[in-house]
Every structure is written in structure tokens, then in C-alpha cells.
Length: 499
Image 1: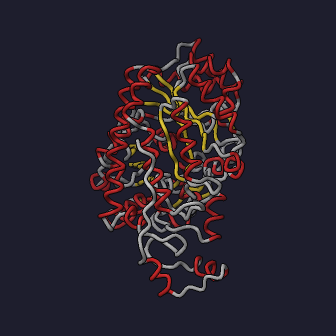
Image 2: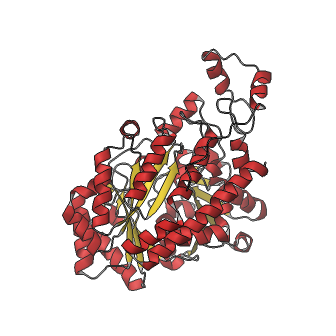
Image 3: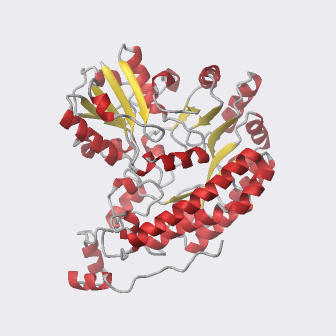
């Protein structure tokens, strides 16, 4: 049987310009799920190939000619692309369609409208039986794996799109449960692989010739002693790559031995969730850190030559524009190598989604916009467009050309060039977004700019959830009154401070 796994990407992210920007931001990589599941099917004798649309083209029409089973791994933002491909496959071929991943696990009935079967949760123990027809349930409940050492390593031989960095996932889940996080809920409880098992996988990637590696654990340093042991083994066994990326928390700054080992093992690029410099906002999302932790982490990472990607959440209910700007200013002060400004996104399956749905604050269910770069809800302290504009202004402010010289001085020429490239891409992206918001009515940016907070969805209708809420607040508005308000003078937020 011929099986094709596809991780789809929305239209913009399949654009060559976007792919170029991704290469400037970091090394191309492929998610491990399809490589693990595909490897299981390959060892069972099937002809398997894997495509990551973010990094290269999957010629669907050519593949439909002789493929028996298409498998899609979907997050929320790429779900519509997967659904469109699933419908195309059903119309024009006799192949079966199987869907799984985060979004399909939270909304399996929705995914099932475009697939023959949906796997909910972890799929390693059921994929072979589903593919070979022994499990015929339309919604298949995956079986969590208690002993992660029994999970096969990703099989990169079946990957058909470019990949420069190998991904290692040494744990599943996270001991913390931030209110906006999906993975800590899907991959619960928190589980670890043995150090020996992790090192064996790293040894395999070294032998394959990879120069870059990513630890894709939600929090690689959650267990500091275990992280230290992995780093020691990498150093002792000469399994160090040119650069390794990992996700960490601010509390790593409290352990200087850990920081030194991370540096020596070339784990020198870390994404840390700063999220906000407003303690009330941090408490509201159950982040479990304080402002001093954030400041300590900034100083410690710079001291040990570990380049920080500062992740900041924009749009928390307790944050104002000034709070957002303070957080970005702080990221510049600590010489963060990169900024990841993530607009608060109410993903299905999270408490934030449930809360916003119940309170009528969702303004769209266009899943393509659920990528942490687009506003999909009514913020508490600004309009939806003001939050969207703030996102772009902060990107432009952080990635200024002058900062590339400082990054070059601290981290070297290669990283200075990358910072300069990101500054250029930021300006092009901001210009394009603002142009569309003013002149291209079919775009989400235009709709958002002309959307009036509090009157329903971006499509111009008053949702059934919102109308009762307006009336409860004493705002007995008719459709005509709402339309008059919607057609009134446009609000133009003040410009961001000069860059």
C-alpha cells in the first residue's frame, strides 16, 4: 500500500517569500509525528513518503494517481488547507483520507467531514491497525504511551521535503498548564524518555550528518538534573552540533552549572516565554513565574552566550499597550536575539477558548487566522485592530537595522546578518499588512481594521452569542442601530513611538 503523510501549510506560508523568511529566522525542520508514524508503516512493508508543505511542494494531483492512503497532521491554522485537500482527494481519487494532530483531536467531528477516519490523541499504537483496515471506527481514540522509550525514532529517510535540523522530543507534555497552551493538555501527563534513549537518537542524527538539532520538548529544562545529564553525555560523546535549539523557562537562570553545560553542548538558542512584565497578567495565565525571574534569565543567558528568542503574548486581559511595549523594550535591553510576539490565540481545547466562546468575545472562526499572528477575539483594553497593529509595530520596533550591529558584536557575523535580514523582512511584512488593511477588502486585515468591537464577527453580522450580552448590559441595540455605529467614523489608533 502506498501511504503519503502531509503536514499542510496555508497559502501564505507556501509562498517562496515566506519560506525565505523562515530560513532567515531559523533552520528548516519537520515535525516528528508523521516521521514516527510513517516509519511504523514503512517497517510493516508499506511504501511511505512524508511532505512538509512549509518547506517544499507536495504535488497532490501527481500523488493522487497511485496513493492509497493520505494522512494529514493538522494544527488549527492549517486545518482548512487539510480539509480542502481531503475534499479534493475524495472528489478525484479513490484514496482514503486519515486526519490526526492537535486540531483534529479537539474537534474530531469537524475533521471527519473531510476525512474517512480521525485519530484522536497519540497515534503510535493504532496507526497500523487503522491503515490496514483492522480498526474501522470513524473516530479512533489513540492510546497514550507510558514508556516513551518504546516509541520508534523518526524516520527521516521517508521525508521528501528539505530539512536542515533534526528534531528530538525527549519528553511529552509539560508540568505547567498555562491557560492558552494546547500541548500540555493533549500530551498529559508529563512523561520523560530515558537519557540513554535520547542519546541514542542524537547519535543517529550525528551519523546522518545533521549540523543542527532542535529539542522540541515544551520545556527541556523542566527537570534540570536530567537536562544536565543529557548535555554532559553530548559533550563527552562528541555529539555536539553547530547549534541546538530548545524551549526553556526563566527558572533555568537559577542554576549556573546548567547554563554552563547548555553552552558547552551548544544548546545556544532558547525560546523563553517571557509573556508579560505585568505580574497580574502572568498570574492570570498561570505562568508560575515572576518579574525578577524574567530579569535574571535575561542576564544569565547573555552571560553564557545563549541567544534568547523572547516570546511575548500580546492581548492578555490585564495588559495594556504600555505593558506590551515595556515587555518588548525589555527584550531589546537584554539583547534578545529574536522576538516571538504571539497574539493571544484561543485555540480549541484550551480554557481561553472556552471562556471567550462563552462570553461572546470570538470575532472569527476562520481557523487559518489561528496562528498567533492574527487577532481572533475582542481584546479587553484596546480594539481588535489596535492589537493587530501593535503586533506589527512591535515587530518593526524590535527588528531595527541598528540592532544587527549589536547582535553581530555579541554573537558573531552570521547572527548579525540574520538579524539584518529579519529587519528587512519585518519592514516588508508591516508594509504589506497595512496596505492590505486599507485597500484590499477581501483580506482579514481589511475586515479587522473596519470591524467595530462588541458587535459580533468580522463578517459584519451580529452573532447570536453577542446580542444577548449587549442586552444584558443595557445596550438594547437594534440591527439598524448597530449598522449605524458600524458605519460611523473610523478609529485610527495613535502611531507607535518613532523607530
